[in-house]
Amino acid sequence: MRLEALVFDAYGTLYDVHSVVRGCERLFAGRGTELSRLWRAKQLEYTWLRSLMGRYAPFSAVTRDALAHACEALGLELAREGADALMAEYLSLDAYAEVPKAFSSLAGIKKAILSNGSPDMLEPLVAHSGLELDAVISVDEVRIFKPAPQVYELAPRKLGVAKERIGFVSSNCWDALGAKSFGFAVFWINRSRAPLERLGFEPDRVVERLDEILL
Image (cartoon, rainbow, N blue to C red):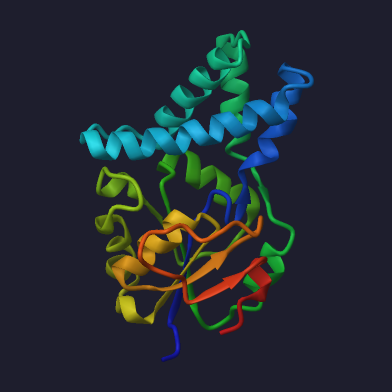
């Protein structure tokens, strides 16, 4: 069955979340990579915890809280101005090198982002990158984070395409398998050659770069 739409995760899939290392290094020389990794880990952990607790907060608030925790855990003193500067890094993350060319080769198919990101983070990020999309969909509409199935349900509803004709693309294995559980055809971009998460599902295809996806 030919796919009519591709739906992409944003963070870690189209955009390199660890491009914030540059900003982290400016504030905390020699600690940038360490801070970036812990910040990202806590950011994801807080989305899962808030979903389980039924205590949704926008991703911008979650990201700021994760940054504060990471800095405290690493013994780094973070002033308000520094926090604002690092949060601003998320509005201009680097797209992975192959993304623009891959998008240009996907003419004739609907393309959308489905992200944990809140609109105040996603809209400037997409504008900065210049990617052309049919929709930018945020979990903010359902007030729960991926991999909750009601998040994935947003894509067929917004695009007017049956879920069986949607391909979902993510570099986050837990996200890819959440989408597979929901019923999408799934492409896992396994950039780090990580082992498959044991969640009872497998992606339809595993690639290492976005431009390896051929429809």
